[in-house]
Structures are given as C-alpha cells and as structure tokens.
View (cartoon, rainbow, N blue to C red):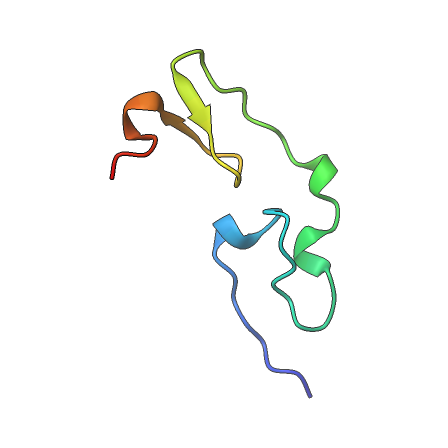
Length: 58
C-alpha cells in the first residue's frame, strides 16, 4: 500500500498538493484560523507573519 509520509506544518494549506494520494493537505483550509498581521509585518504564502526587517533579508 501507500507509504505514510509526514508533512511539515508549513506544507499544509500552502496552495501546493503534497500528498501523493490526493489533496488531503489542502482540504478544509478555509476552516483554519487566519492570523492577522500587524502593520509592521509581512504575511508569507504559508500564512505566517514576519517582521518587515526579515522580508527579503538576503
């Protein structure tokens, strides 16, 4: 049968299907609590808020 794989929390509801047997990691994402970022923060594609000083801090 299919092997079990663990996903990092940042891979769940990130807009990319990571599960090989379906879209289970992208289902019910609308039910997740969305954090509100402060004015001095930037929202990453995974929903995490980071301070603007870390945005593109090559």
